[in-house]
Length: 75
Image: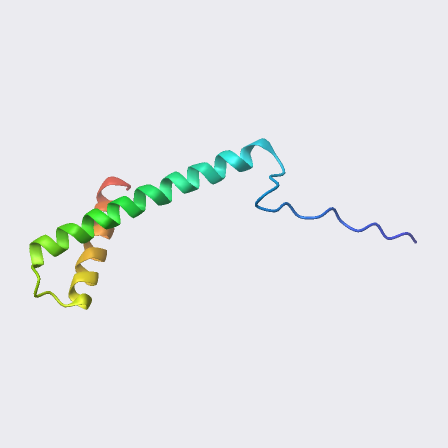
């Protein structure tokens, strides 16, 4: 019996088909948008809560705003 090893798996640098690069670009764009939204939520929480907000309160408010915005606009 002759054993033939399977072909190597594709790497990030070597896409195995034409959709791989587009998929990565779509993911990168989506993550960039999420980052922008989270940054905006953070700035809003800072403005609304003031300088006396603790880091935990600021983080919680930011995450709450972020999740609420995503739920409202991405049902």
